Image 1: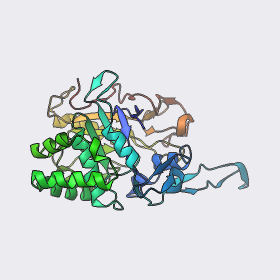
Image 2 (image 1 turned 60 degrees about the vertical axis):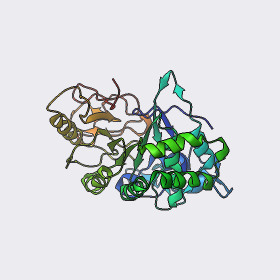
Image 3 (image 1 turned 180 degrees about the horizontal axis):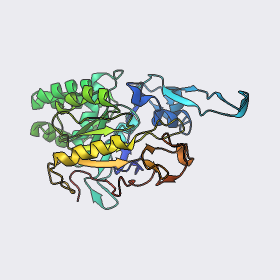
Image 4 (image 1 turned 90 degrees about the vertical axis):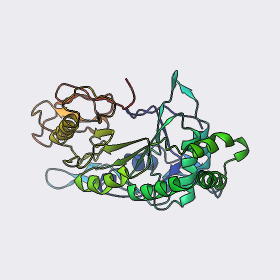
Length: 354
């Protein structure tokens, strides 16, 4: 297993060591990862820490689409798209954990590249024992030369766990991480003992910690816990954006915004996106380009109806769906590639990059 470059626009590499998940809030209802694991990747296998073999399809429930109705209410041959949801089985994949330790130092000539950690699962899932989180922290400390971008919906557990771990003495913190690697089945003879020990004694928290928030309720619940979590930086992924969000409290380092994708995607109003953009710009005194310490903005995965130019919506894997405002099909941009313009400008800011 090797590092895989990702099509996710705000990271260089995506790597998951946890398999499976379960619904945490409304943002999970059309989970793209459950759809992939239950369809295209359903035959992909992995072995858990007990040596048991699983396939990705074992972790997903499938809800078959219902027949579409014709003009007289008669069923047509066409059906609504299937829906997919994780069934709550969650495992650590030790082979993937080892692959994370072995990630290359350079990719495409770039050092210090970013890794979207557990992009298809949740690092702090409630089904995972504490030592699984410790094992992942051990990897982040071993690979502090990379920018680990950790995104969770379980912000409370993540905050409590990392705060407690970082409050330990360096020796106790090292012992917890070292023992967790052994529990995960990692061959510790090949692990650079001194590098992990030095990171623990330096007291560093080199990872970037983020939360997903799809609406005001999830934002207000998760952001205070995120701010209290030890990390080199904090960010929020407002994706899928399902409602307006007021950025209450101190600003974070980074805000990522995107609409939902997939055949059952729910539309996003462009005014919601504009509001977040305006709040970020106001926090940096209107500066078009951020200075160090300013909040950064990344807008992705939006399509705009050219007929009414008022709403954002997404196309299901390239096939147009009607604009929720006017019913038109005139789509501008591409929902899956690049950074779509918002009022004439694309926003692709990443902290710490030119």
